[in-house]
Length: 355
Image (tube, rainbow, N blue to C red; front, top):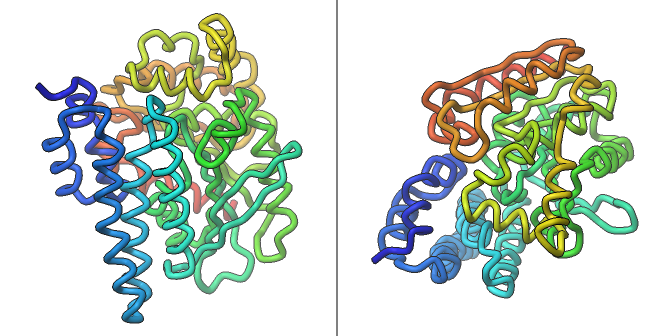
């Protein structure tokens, strides 16, 4: 009998994985042929190897655009192999390294190309991928903020939406995320890393530090408006399916999601983990948001109930504008109906950058 976690993956993850770049055939093969959750990471790592080999062949033949495309697909497969695999930290970390390495290899071959950047943060370093649109000297910048289990190597197609509309993207792994998750625990006060990213942007002569927007996905849908409450003069903030108050839905989180939060929270026992979760609330800070706010929610969201989006909409009473796109047939992050919000939210941000 197939592991219930694999069954859950098959039932709920196709929208996210396919819309973010995993070939549908790979998703179907892995979720059909893999019987045990313990084999999940290696199954997707093997898929990633196929795409990595295709990239190497293209690179050797001088077809660099194709090489970049294959490498991005490989990174997506590696990422989704490791993203919730906290039950085997050694395998998770080794597969994650493959994702980072192959995506970094892809960066110069992308259109537009990307640059791996290092961001000083509280005596440590956060890593990000910076991409700028072609033909624009000092473009505005959208900071892409990851969720609980996402990482910068997952964001190629989300970045492209903004790049195609004349905005640069800086996608980074913050505390408890991606490359930072091994040394830095989750940071409920996420304005701290975002402020560090903004300071980094100010050092770049090729970016317009006066035109910055935030985009946050899932847990990043909490992190982004949290940061917007403290980071002033932002052009806009997009919040995708984030919790308004994590403590309200902590007990109802899917098992893999809750286990992942516990692992990356930095808590040592249930009491300390719940205390960290209780700090992840917008209740007392949402009214400090002043920039335009675009909220996306899915009524069928099984991870973060859509009521949290309405709580944010109500609490952010001082935002200069609030747009809430509530998708009746949308699941978590509306990945199953991505076409209903992705272009619209990117168009909205592009407009805000010029106002």
